[in-house]
Length: 548
Ligand code: FBP
Image 1 (cartoon, rainbow, N blue to C red):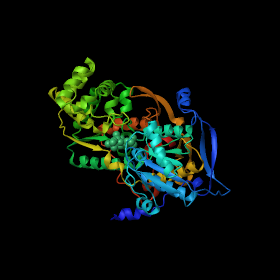
Image 2: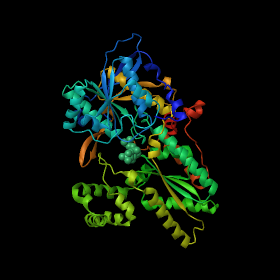
Image 3: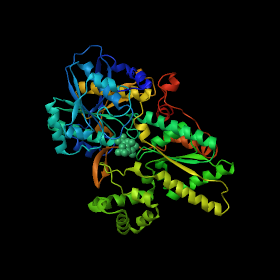
Image 4: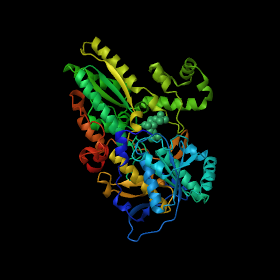
């Protein structure tokens, strides 16, 4: 396969490991843990894996002799930069335990385990993918691993390949399922450990013990680079307002991080919209006001960052989506109707209040709200064109203001959606090191014999050698939430904390950014060069950890 010059140079990069993982490793057990909420219920549902101690690794003065171990690995859900390094770190960690250890990759996500599709990952395959972006080494998928029949079917192939540990690389939903699988295999004495690895560009799988999910760092650096480029462009031509939607599912971590890096004129934070009970019109008025004020200085241009999950956080829209969810779930033949029939059906079935909101939306956006949910029951927010909805409504508002003699400028909008272009970028040095350490650490958890744990590497604002490594029982991160009409144990999603340092930094500066032109141009990710250019973790992480 032909390689670019950067790919060749990058292949030779040796990711850094935390000091504790460099030689023989000893597992130190902490105190028994508890779930973040609903302790009695989670304990009842996870009798074999609840309350386990946190584990920290340290250097073992007495070298240990390991036995060969066969391990399976699955990439689950959306791509995130660094997945290949988790797998190469895992591979190297297993080979360190014993050179006859073997690693099998299940293909195209959790479905590969159930359908028995796999390959053995050998050294030449792993070497091809070190420090590269993407999940193409084994592919990824969104099959939800949750039923006993799937677990049993998976166990057949695990037994056939003599696999005694499974590593699931995924987001909050996939790690929730990893915990359920770990509990089931433990309960039936299957002899298979299950270890999770925190993945997602969305940055919403984090807590006091998981400082960040991998991929967030690289993806936000890619988006911030292009936002900066757009800002240079609009500052040069001075004629467009750019509405930029950013991936991130429900949480606004990505939008917030990009705002901190690039200092756009406006960034909407969904969690704040919900907390302040804002309407769509409130958001539109806020943007229109900035457009008017900038136009008074002759600046008919600017940038607006919009988190992709915004629509779900506007309280009135949230109610509408909730009613639509129930309506769609109860009417299986909805997808067979044509667009006009679907619209009529919805308008006559919704409550009067929700029908009025639905009817007020541009037809395209209204239809996008009824598209198929993903296998976890989430609205596919990446398919809803919120950036267009907002700019259209801002345009209407400005026309009104113009008619009232309150706006004399020009308003011409451009639209962008950044998501897929950042998910498979070559991992930044931070993600390359972090992912390699997470994978290597997962091998250490396997050697320690534990199950139902998430690989945890912490102290991430320090240099990689100073990072701490260990494992956190997944049940510790769980609470009970309503999903598809039922209360289920799930990992608590981390939304933007409006009292946290990253949001406060942003809120303290945004009024300045809105009216003035304070753009920062972060430029492309650098892999080689001075550490302050190449090795800085995200600003979110820095503010969260250093600005307490
Ligand atoms: P994960 O939670 O699986 O990591 O999702 C990441 C993500 O990129 C979201 O930001 C986005 O909403 C979604 O995937 C898009 O899904 P798809 O890849 O199925 O289009």
